[in-house]
Amino acid sequence: MKYTDLNSIDLLDIPKISDPRGNLSVIEKELLPYAIKRVYYLYDVPTDAFRGGHAHKEQSEFLIALSGSFNVVLDNGKETKTVTLNKPYKGLLIPTGIWRELSDFSSGAICLVLSSGEFLEEDYIRQYSDFKSFVGA
Image 1: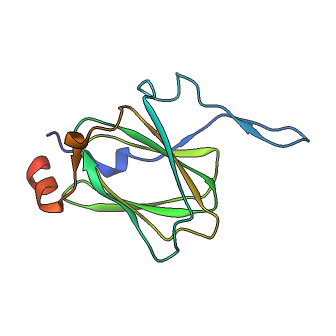
Image 2 (image 1 turned 90 degrees about the vertical axis):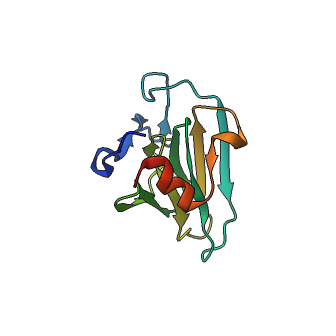
Image 3 (image 1 turned 135 degrees about the vertical axis):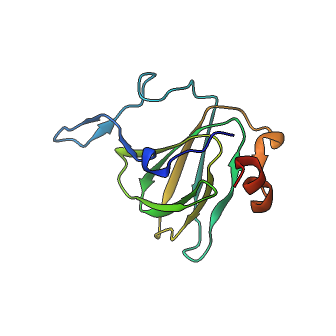
């Protein structure tokens, strides 16, 4: 697996159309480098709980805080980086081979995930030691 520099992973702007009636953000095919195959969202996550705790072998994911805020800890096997998601017009594109953990959910936080693949258990790396082997760390 090729090493992914965490500095290359940053928030992407989602186009926002402002209007006196409210804002509208649009995700179209040009924003993501893949076709969206699965959409899911996390909500009612207790403040002291965490989600994630895995990496993907093939899938990429785009995370958006539709409401509230939460932290995403990214790990490439050599270093970590924490990104706070708290704006519905910013998203975090997580490439394959990156361990992620989501934590510090605010009350009412909603995390939307747009995935490049359908659910496939074989694509998940759920043990950190297996992840380290996968990335050659």
